[in-house]
Amino acid sequence: MSDRLDWFLDRSSPEPLHMQLVRFVKSKIEDGEWSVGMRIPSQRDLAANLKVNRSTVVAAIEELTAMGLLEGRAGGGTYVVNTTWSVLAAKPPLNWLHYVEAGNHRPNLKLVQDINEAEFQPGIIRLGTGELSSELLPQRGMQQILSRLSQGPLWLGYEEGRGNARLRQAIAEHMGRAGIHGSASSILIVSGALQALQLIAMGLLERGSTVLIENPSYANSIHVFQAAGMQVSGIPMDDEGLRASLLPHYRQQTAASLLYTIPSFHNPTGTVMTDRRRSELAQICRQERLPIIEDDVYRDLWFDAPPPAPLKARDPEGMVLYVGSFSKTVSPGLRIGWITGPEPVIARLADIKMQTDYGASSLSQMVAEEWLRSGAYEAHLAELRLALRARRDRALQLLEQYCGGIAQWNKPQGGFYIWMKLSGDVPMVRLFELARQEGILLNPGIIYDRHTSQHLRISYAYATAVDLEYGIRTLSGLIRTLLRGPIDES
Image (tube, one colour):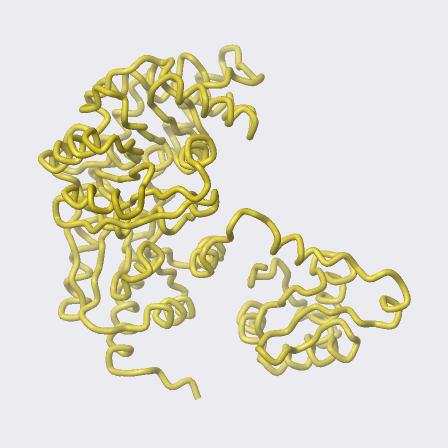
């Protein structure tokens, strides 16, 4: 369950605070929102969330325990039990926890769940978020496009399975400028790049199969392949990107079915795979008959020069499924991405998408087409690249000022991320918790590679200039304190 409550104490009420909490928890249980067997938030989390002394929470829990609604357990934590006489005399309540635990979709990592939840807490400084700040989103451009579209007829029905034909043609022309030549019939419109990966996992891979990924990788933080019953196996990287020469060995060891890679402004390291390495990778995958998913959602966010041609641009045999998106460049709320690949594969994935949600939003597809057709997309990109480059430079200055001597980092040539390596042994989960107490949300490297215990993903795309400086300065202090030894909480 969520550790954050969408509820507040009424401090002007004559009712004691702990009794207000008792009444709230009791209503949650009686209304069935908190089911039997569910673990409630910890005393510390409740106290912090409600901004009260821990003694207030303890008093409420003791009252609820006496009522037979809660129970503390030896292993730690407090759980909903509902053993009141009225309940015991009737049928036992439905235990939804059994259904939750029996679901076949694997839950996210606890740390990732905490990050996803904390991102929407008021006042939190998101120091690792892979999203554009509202300052960088094209508010005026979007309003102009919506205004133009509103002057003509709007298509409010479903689109065909592969998506709006005009948008697919516009995307084909857009990709052609990057050297990818394909027709609109080889493109499927999806609701963001993540859905593209989900469709591929559901439609093309057998349960129990193995997907090769870079190590570290964004794919480790989302469990899209693991949730569909697949295994992932990481291949090391160097300054040129994924070490392609190791592919045959890993393929033999794992009998892998597919390779997933982010060659341009890699997430989380920011690495750009060199042209030489891309050619080597393409050649080895052809020899191994190993299909590739090329996740290229950051490609357009270069600062000084475009990255090398995509893997899909050197794919005469149709071995690459190319994934693009507008989420990192125009708007994550638009929810429009695409897959390009062989037509039989696109037809298969389109069929699954129609079974899943009956197609992406028709209105969003009209907006996306207008961005491409009108020239607004390229104009916006020119401004966005300048803004992101200035943010990157400022972030690097702040890291040098506050973190020199305690960390090392790369200088990205595009995208959102700085991959920061701490110089000493710092307990990363403890650092995450301490930073969160200071109102700062981190993305520890362990969510991208569970063996990476010294890295952080720093994003310069989201936090304001003021928040970025405060966040990095505070982070520096926490790291230096932890490097000196454990923090005494007594």
